[in-house]
Image 1 (cartoon, helix red, strand yellow):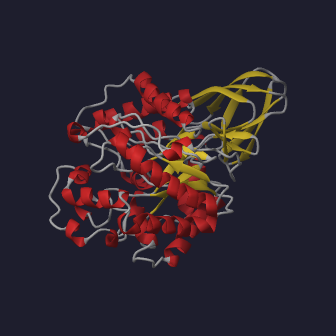
Image 2 (cartoon, rainbow, N blue to C red):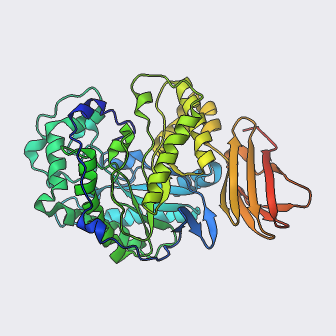
Amino acid sequence: MKKILTLLILIPLILISCGGKTKEEKGASTPQIKAYPLYVENYQFKKDGYTFLARGINVAGDWKYKNAPAIYPYLGNVTEGTFRWLREDLGYNFVRMLAIWAAIEPEPNKFNEDYIKEYAKRVSWAEENHMYVFIDMHQDAYSEAFYKYGGDGAPTWTCPSKYYQDQPDMPRWELGYLTPGVLACVKRFWSNEDNLWWHYGESVKRILQPFAKSKTVVGLEIMNEPFWGPFGPDTFERKYLYRFYLYIGKIIQQIAPQKIIFFEPAASKNLGYPSELPPIPFPQLAYAPHFYLTTFYLGRTYPGDMTGMLQESMETRIGEAKAQNAVPIIGEFGAWMDRESTIKYLKDFFNAAETVKINLTQWELTDTEYRFQNSDYWGEWIKVVIRAFPEMWQGNLVKYSYDPYKLILSITWEAKNKDDMIVTLPHYIFKKQCSVNSAPDAIKWEWINKYQIRITAEKSDTFNIKVNAETTQH
């Protein structure tokens, strides 16, 4: 649920059940179209024939709440300058932008057009700074009415008020999911009582419609961390979540057929459960599970040197994405342990992610800004998190890795003569200074803005390239 799903105590209570294929599965077909501005091909994001690697961030945790400090309710305090900082200084090229059902439809059948316009303004700020966006229909603990657990998502009116009464204290907010009120409201939603899916779908229409032809919004994620409630995770995925995804996916296809549909497995994925979600029958898909290893959020320190284990977990997610004919992207990741463990974990996490070349969106902007401005270990944290990477390329990216201590980006690239690659070098680290080393006369390179270089192959070959910062002064 939020970031650390500590529902391990629930596992013995879950009823696991398996079933055959549904009618929807048997009849599924996948017409082929290309999405815009990015499309999915061979389990990768593509743009104009280039492969595109998403290195993104969630914007933002404080967008969940109406009463959080904000320029506009549910939209935090980001400005156009914030997006410029994210893109140029920190190197992020992708935004998972939170949208809240309660903000879109605060009362039944009454939609908040002002919120939608303000949301669109923030999308325009991302566009001005050359960042792609996918809309995230976010929820935690079902609804903002469950204030004790930091709830967000559904409007209060979607569940009878009796279920919001007598919210028991819980030792962790995530355990609010186990309380009778949350379980009752979740069950009502997945059972589509009071035609709640229709209301949710109308809200999806309202938030996505302005971006149907957008050059910036690449798609929409149907729901953040769907919780299985009183159902076993596999039963939930097959019987409820799958049908919900079909319902909302058809709406997305109707109003924005050139957008990518982002979707997650049940939140039980954070507990290590394999996904039992049947194949989703839409043509342009992004499979966006989260990456929080519960073991290291239950009071244990992270020992380090576990890159192999993290890589294996990522490869499992990649395999599930391929089974869905989707591009894999980790929709959220992060670490909130002791100082030493956090740095060790993030170091291993990025080593694994670069090895498998997976797309990422980090949790989240609010926390990043806090660390940037206030944390005494920002210097250590930023060395690990703010990274150079190949953003777009022709040909085949064989492998890449970034050493955050030596400030060296290493790339092995198979390319034809005149193929090119765009490499992002965050300005905060590189200050538009670098050296690019490869075989003599094999490549040429140039700065194309303050945070990116273009590398062009001068012949057809396999190139081993090192991009090295020439200054470490910040």
